[in-house]
Image 1 (tube, helix red, strand yellow):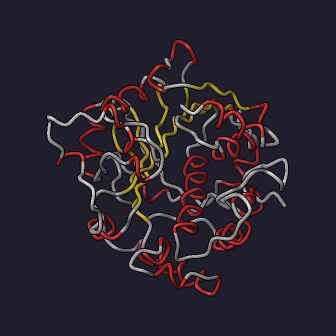
Image 2 (tube, rainbow, N blue to C red):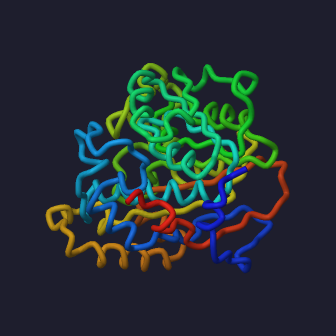
Length: 325
């Protein structure tokens, strides 16, 4: 079972939001401002259970400052939201594919989840896991995620694929494969850049020619490895083809957080509260405007044959439960 600290984090259920239909473009509830501000000031070590302040940190994500508007602030918010989204689903057993440094998995293991991590870059991820105080509690299986099978590693309440699908040549095959690891009531948590964003310069998945084969280009890291982007409608169609339903879809990431339009030139601590409040305010826009204005998507998927009612919760990430001070 999950440690009781998880239930301490999950509060203020909004039962009025229950619906029998899959949810699209609901408002994103941001983590508490004090936590966001602290992570911008001190890095993700605030929530990651790192053994030492001397852990390698060449890009400054763990211990460095990153104030909005900037990609650094955006990345910190994205990590906080990923932890929050995962906690909201109350998993017991978690699989994270293409996990990179496995910070999200370490956070989930910290509160009692049984976590299995996969990444193609075996040595890098294995070394990263050793940096966590609970690294011995995380099962690591290196290699291509398509080589994994449920017969080999079992079924999971939650399968996480953060910033993965846009790097994979055949996204339908990815979703179909991830579905094989789900328990009957399991969920997939997926994050990806938003292809509907009005400044997107990459082709979206439906705009690709059938003659184009990206197989030799897939699995490359970072933005340079983006083969295409996905719109919410394309995700909906792919999920349906894979036998999955979108239970919840969030659009977030405005220029005041990301630093687009040259706003990164004005980044600084003095703008943190303003950026946070504006990001929260934008979440009151209707779904079509959110999908055009925001750069990031977070999606929860469930198997099509499940008929239970999806539940949204309000803010579940509390500073007291995650601070490593």
